[in-house]
Image 1 (cartoon, rainbow, N blue to C red):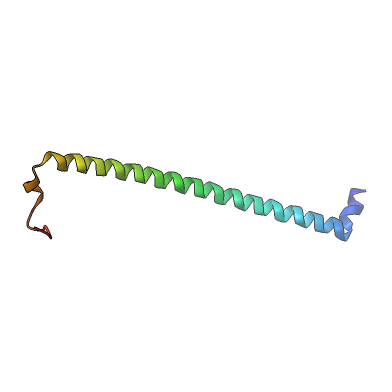
Image 2: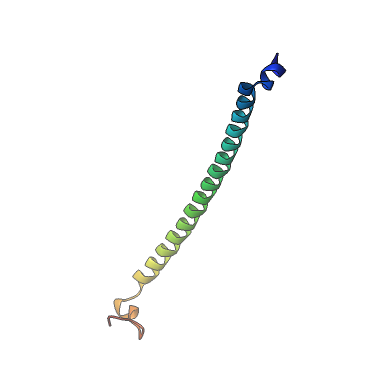
Length: 76
């Protein structure tokens, strides 16, 4: 009975549709995983950059204002 259905055009189209949907689902899951990993990597980098910026801000706030100007300052 099943083999008879699979030999018909409708059965073959059903098998092809199932195979295509399985491949599309597989590709979507791979893309989703890649996007999730990339977002985590970007979030980690932004956290590291925020820590560096906070450290630089704390370091600069300890210095007197005149110490921030040097010979490479554009608006001195």
